[in-house]
Length: 264
Ligand code: PEP
Ligand code: MN
Image 1: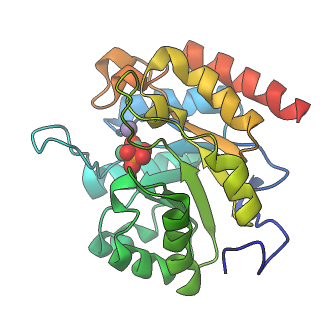
Image 2: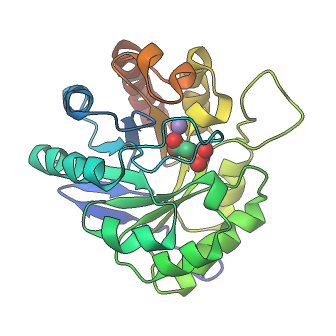
């Protein structure tokens, strides 16, 4: 069902208020790895509005390698995030980690994110197949593109056609970067599927200085959009600060992404 053989026309998702994801629309989504507090959200939302970006990413349930790391504000954080975003016409994308969260999060998100560690959590994918909200599935840490497409097929065949795929880097033998952003994925996925394809250069390379370069490369490779981490003070971020852009870097990147997109 997710194949171009089944549907030739590219899928375009409408989040409302003029925000669309897919062919013909440049999707930009930015925000902190973790939602931390009201003041942080306020500053981030103002930064997004100042730069005409309508989607904010931010985690409230965080999959952390260490159980002692900050694991997110949970539902209370999401409710505040939602309330503040609604008031400003901003759409929310945030990670859902388990089946039991799907229902409680449902009314407070615009796009559910399935993280790289959950790409093959088939129970979660089944549950998301039953909701009427878009789902962005990230590629598994060591997942093939075929496996990513199969994960999307779970959701699609369950009845939810509102899907987005995200290349976020894979684990290879290389240790100079956090992950290896596989830009090969973009043209391959764009040919194989009618679903929108987004690139996450933040987790893809993991090093702040190189994030803009890889974001621009992702767009040139044909991605429908870029999702990246930004924070007013990256060095103080509760998670992933080393790969997070400050507002100045973020604003410059947004301008450059728009220029590159216009050249395509
Ligand atoms: C994130 O988006 O902050 C995240 C945890 O991403 P991933 O699942 O790709 O590691
Ligand atoms: Mn992160």
